[in-house]
Amino acid sequence: MALTAPTVLILAAGQGTRMRSATPKVLHELCGIPMVMWPVRAALAAGAKRVVVVDSPPRALAGVLPEGVELAVQPLSDGTGGAVRAAAEQIDPDAPVVILSGDVPLVGAQAIGDLVEAHTGSGAAATMATAVLDDPTGYGRVVRDPDGSVGRVVETKKPGDATEEELRIREVNSGIYVFDGSALLGALPRLTADNAQSEYYLPQALDFLRADGAKVAAHVVEDEGLMLGVNDRVGLARVRKLAQRAIAERHMRAGVTILDPASVQIDVDVQIGQDTTIEPFTTIRGATHIGSGCAVRCSYLVNCVLEDGVSVGPFAYLRPGTVLRAGAKAGTFVEIKNSDVGAGTKIPHLSYIGDADIGPRSNLGAGTITANYDGRAKHRTTIGSGVRGGVDTSFVAPVTVGDGAYTAAGSVITEDVPADALAVARARQTNVEGYASRPVSSDGAAGSSPPSAEPPPAVSHPAAGRQADEHES
Image (cartoon, rainbow, N blue to C red; front, side, top):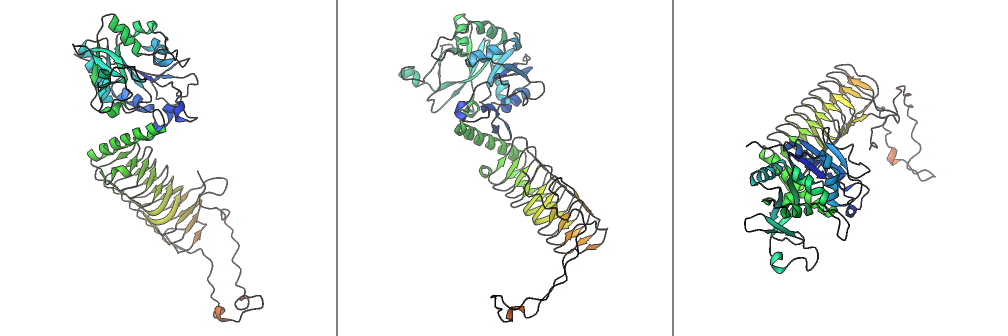
C-alpha cells in the first residue's frame, strides 16, 4: 500500500531562555545552518506534502525558511498543545501529521519515513517515537498495555511521579509523534490547561484518543541520538559532536580520507570528491566544494571551490569567493579571497591574494601581495598564464600582468606589465663601504653621516598608496 505523504509540523516557538542569547534558540548554527533547518530539510527529504513551522509572534524565522515551507504563529507561549493548535488550519485531516521539534535536530528523513510507515501499518490513531535508554533518568516512561499499545506515559520530573516499578522501565517518550489528521483535529479543542504552568500539552491528546477507544502505538527508534534535544549551549555542543561524526562518516563512506575525524570540522553543505584527503585540524565551512584527488592540510576553508587535484596548506585560509582550478596549490600560510587561481598555478607560501584573477601555470613567489584596497574601494589584479613572480612582489591594483612575464624580487608593481617582459620596480641599492668601522661621532652614532643617496623618483601611479586588504572583516 502506498503511503500518504504526511504533513510535518515543526514546533519552533519556544523562547530558549536557557541558551542565554539574543538569538532565538532554533536559529543557533549547527554545522553551517540554523538548527531549525535540520528538521525542515529532513521533512522535505522524507517527501512531506506540507511542512509547517510554528514560530512566535516576532516571526524570527520568516526570512530563514526555504520557499514552500509555511509559517504558523503561536500568539501566546502556551505549550506544545498550543503550538499545534496554532497550525490547526494547515493540518490535512486525510493525511498523517508528524510532530517534530525545532530543537531536536538530528531526526533524519529515514527516521520520519520509518515512523510514518509504522504508524500507517499499525492501525493506530497516533504513534509516538520511543527509545530504549541505558539511563532513562528524567524522561517520561512508556507503559505498554498487554497488546503492545501505549497505555500511558508516566512523567518522572518530581519524586513520587512514578512508582519504583515504573522507574525501572527503560523505554521513554521522545516527544516525536505522528497522528491521523482527523484524530488530531478532533482532540485539539479538548486540550485543557489545568496544570501548574497553565499550558496546553500535546500528550493530553493521546489520553483523549485512548479514552475514545482508539489505539496509540509506539515505534522504537534504534538510534537514541535522533531524539537528543537542545536546551542550552552544552546540549548544542553535544548535538554538534554527533552531527559532525555523522557528516564525517558520510564523506568517508563516499571515498574521502579523513585522517582524524574528531579533529576536523565540516559543515553539512560541504561537498568533497573521492580520493581527497582531509588532514587533522582542518575546518571546512559553508557551501565549499572540493573536487577529487585533493589534499587539504590543517587549513580553514569558507565558501570556496577546489577543483580536482588541488593542494592546500598547511595553515592556509581560503575565504569566500576563492576558486582554485585543477591542480592549483595554495601553500603554507597563504590567504586567498575572492580570487580565481588558474589550473596548475602555485602560490606556495606566505602570500595574500585578494580580488585577483590568475591564469594557469603561473608561480608566485613567497610574500606575494595583491594590494587590492585603496581605503575607499576594492580593485582587481589580473595576472596572466605562465607568469613568474619574484619573492616579495606587491601588485598594486588595478594592474595587469601579461602572459609569460616575470617580476623581480622585492618589486612593487604599479603599472601594467607586457607579456614576456621582466618588471623591476624597486629602489636602487647603495652600499657605504667601511661605514661600521668609522669613529663614533659626538652624538654617539657610529661613523659620520653617510653621503646622501640620490632621492627616489616621485611615484606617479595614482594607486601607489594602496595596501593589502588586511582589515576586512
